[in-house]
Image 1: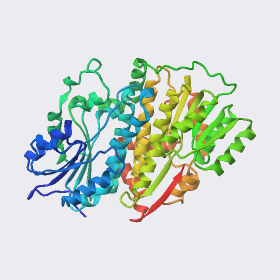
Image 2 (image 1 turned 180 degrees about the vertical axis):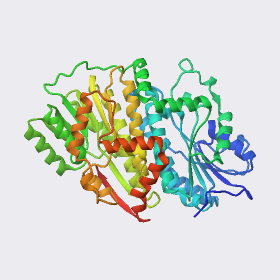
Image 3 (image 1 turned 45 degrees about the vertical axis):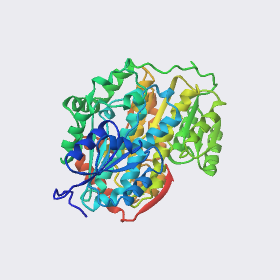
Image 4 (image 1 turned 135 degrees about the vertical axis):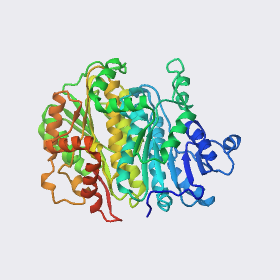
Length: 532
């Protein structure tokens, strides 16, 4: 379909999002000077670009915080006769600076849409145009993804999710389209003021100018590095954050200012566990395990029949059980769930377990199904956590469990949106751990294949089903990890070995994942959405 090489006998077509300000605008100016054909995307009126001196550029006035932004960009390209695309540069981004408990739901959904859903949707929509010339997709991430920055928690999580998506997509489109991630450091742009940072708190005028960062990005676009961190200092920060995660988290946790808890101590006779997706699979096993350990269980799930069956089993154990039927792909569901929880008082343990998947080749899968994966697996836990904090339903000893995935270490070709959701979830969990103060109160779990209906539905080959970990075993390991006050859990010796191998020899593990999953999928394979 394409060799990945782009000839220079004629101007190349570059599509740049966020092109009306900051790095995007500076990069557009540089590329125009190189006589490239530009397609610029931004939310400001067209006069902004005319005033900036752009001649001959195609401008698509599109707000990437809107769910139909990809369709609007596609229509703009059709209207202007833009065919093949040589470079798609995802530069646009939105930010927020402040306490996790202060970020409103509308802002969380805007960041997830702008920073993650929009790049995924645009890549899916424009991939055929890129394939025609063996083009390149460049994702602008941030050096901050290596750090648990609690006051940028959602921003950092969306960028980590974007990197997880890029890593898995790269394996899928190898030989057809190049995929690159670029990590700038702190840059002098208008985003800091928009994110709510005062100059007294952070003087962003001292950051690297956007023009210099744009020059660095231009220099690496034609290179062959998969991931590029711009600047030696930023590269050091990135490597240190990944090499010593526990030390970094402990240091930053001690310096953090935890949110004010309106409830100092739970008044419940028995501790309460709030768990999402407890109707079946891993969630059901954890609900039963914690019920036997003395917790009352409250859960939100979309399946009323399986929820009722699990609830009856919890009650037979002797624990109270309350199931809230709702669809977590709806952003409003988080607030509805928290309102239902409020009547029972504070929560001692929060388990973010609910998850859906869509397995198949990225360009063959429905975009709507992939959006739903991001909404349930990633956006819903962010909204729920913020709502629980704002409602005063957490006290100073409340604990969290985030069920991520081994894909955070090994990638997941054939389910790039799922990989994105879990990478983002794990990054948010790190930031929350720091935000909650000196005590370690967040456990992130990275399970491999588990013997559930979910795994059976989404595996291209179930011949090894008996070797998958039983959900009851995983639930027991999670409870033990909580008792040890662990920060992460990779359950199972084989999974830990694979994660270690991926750290030192990522290309070898990516090849194994390609053979184990992607190569067993037919070009049009699609597996319908399902629960953990």
